[in-house]
Amino acid sequence: MSSRTEPSFRESVDLMFNRAVSLMDLPPGLEEKIRVCNATYTVRFGVRLRGAMHTFTGYRSVHSEHMEPVKGGIRYATGVNQDEVEALAALMTYKCALVEAPFGGSKGGLCIDPREYDEHELELITRRFAYELAKRDLINPSQNVPAPDMGTGEREMAWIADQYARMNTTDINAKACVTGKPLNAGGISGRVEATGRGVQYALREFFRYEEDKAAAGLSGKLEGKRIIVQGLGNVGYHAAKFLSEEDGALITGIIERDGGLYSADGLDVEAVRNWIVKHDGVAGYPDAQFVEDGALLLEEECDVLIPAALEAVINLSNAERVKAPLIIEAANGPVTAGADEILRKKGTVIIPDMYANAGGVTVSYFEWVKNLSHIRFGRMQRRQEEARHQLVIDELQRLDDVMGDTWSMSPHFKEKYLRGADELELVRSGLDDTMRVAYQSMREVWHSRDDVTDLRTAAYLVSIDKVAKSYHAKGL
Picture 1 (cartoon, rainbow, N blue to C red):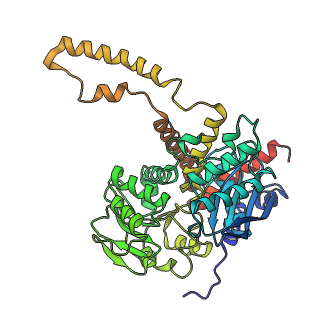
Picture 2: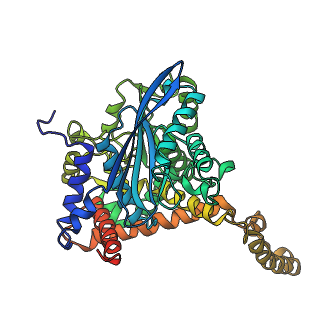
Picture 3: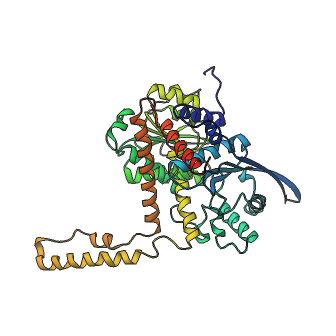
């Protein structure tokens, strides 16, 4: 165990910010303006449950309003505190800037264990929390737009949207007050899978560059690569599912609250997920080796490690023993600043959280735009695309008829080519493009500057520069 003091999550974000701005030439005072949170609101409210009044504490932090509205999730967890919320809000600012989503950074949290309450009680609590935030304009389509986070999902977002609409009966854009809603409440196809899908696209983009793979001591394609995933929640599950089913990667390890599973031949992600849903953990799963101390799998041999659940799981106590040459941070802040330094010295390549898990906010942006435009993507152009494609198919069919056995269309070509893109395909296309462009902006800095040796610093440099230019354009 190291004798060094582990920085807090907030301190880790500040340390990484400081490392980046030391390489920049920002005007006096602007560095501090970008660093600090503009405002943090603490709300305490009562809800009558089970015949008694219960008081809850919630937070909403606004880090930067260089662009508005500000954007960021609401998490339900017992460990929520002001420092954590402010650090997450700062990360949201940099994340949105990096992927060119036109938002400032915000974050919210409620000190609650959602598993201790039934659905009706959670609805009462959520609606009251939403009321307290909305009346302070901390939920508003043009000022502050929350989304799901740890402990929340589509259900909670639908309650929040409905509560806002009840308070603002003439706001035609009320649905845009929050993203991550169910489809039948103004949501968008692909939002649930978005963060995990973004992790997949991020890895695909990394593996397109020989120079980047070489930096991690890797080669070839994603196919056959051994991947260990920490946390099979929404993000970890979708990332593992897509990487195994579509890219041929082997998910050799899965870490959950009650332990871990390991199989050198690869785990069936869907089967493990179903087991967790049924048994509330991985213990007893029959087709893999069970590891009681799941955290030990973070130190197992693999090609890619995906921490996808909690903050600070890779820290000063275990960083030296982490063997993965490539880590992609699907969670927020899973590698502490101290561990980051150790891993960089070892030559580990880390794809940072502000980029790797930006799929969620990217598709949230698409949902917000959909709500403001009041039309689903693809509705105007899909059939027109199919009609244009039909002209090509008709011409190919004519050639097919004329040339007989000497030439013919490939099986299923006609069906695939004719089909116009629906909302899900358009969302995935937009997300893929966003992840590619953002990665390219990071790697350009990474490879063009001698004083930048890692992707995290490159990501901070790109995002802080964009925030600084936004403030400059405002006259600050």
